[in-house]
Amino acid sequence: MVDEARFPIGKFVAPPGYQPHAVAAHLAVLRELPDRLRAAVAGLDATRLDTPYREGGWTPRQVVHHVADSHTHAYLRSKHALTEDVPTIKPYDEAVWAALPDARLPLAPSFAVLDGIHTRWVALLESLDDAAWQRAYYHPESAAHWPLWKVAALYDWHARHHVAHITTLRERMGW
Image 1 (cartoon, rainbow, N blue to C red):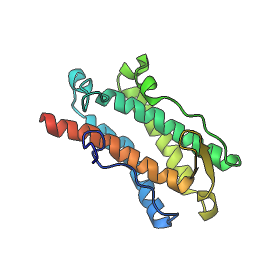
Image 2 (image 1 turned 90 degrees about the vertical axis):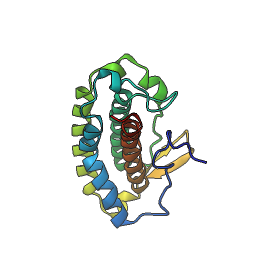
Image 3 (image 1 turned 60 degrees about the horizontal axis):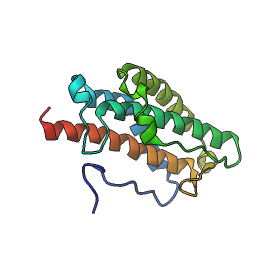
Image 4 (image 1 turned 30 degrees about the vertical axis):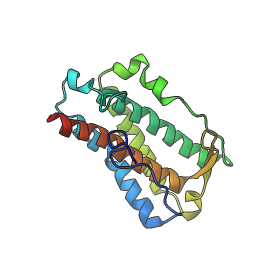
């Protein structure tokens, strides 16, 4: 059974293979992510921004900063996959990063990062041909190769997953 507070849209399910029409849909989600995340936190005061979305979960503030960190990594990993032969990426401990002091900053710096990263990342991904979508990196934690078409699917899910953390919190709390 899926913990709905932790996985409000369900767990990630990888597509069975490369499908150009699916990739276009993933890119649309990535293009819209900064605006959707802004809308999710719009009007929240400091107390609400610092309210965990579930027991033991992150706050909306931490979620926004996490998405900026995570999607920056994804963008750079995509560039490595396009310029190196199946590079091994460097994992990071998301929970430790979310507890660092910069995760308590106002949201504006992370939205600036997201605006820039998503503009560049989507433009890069939109330029790929079918062969480039097959380029991959190796993730040592999952012991798996991640072709870029699968990365696009994962980060489409990741974007919707974290927006839903905030929107379902707002619904539950009546904000």
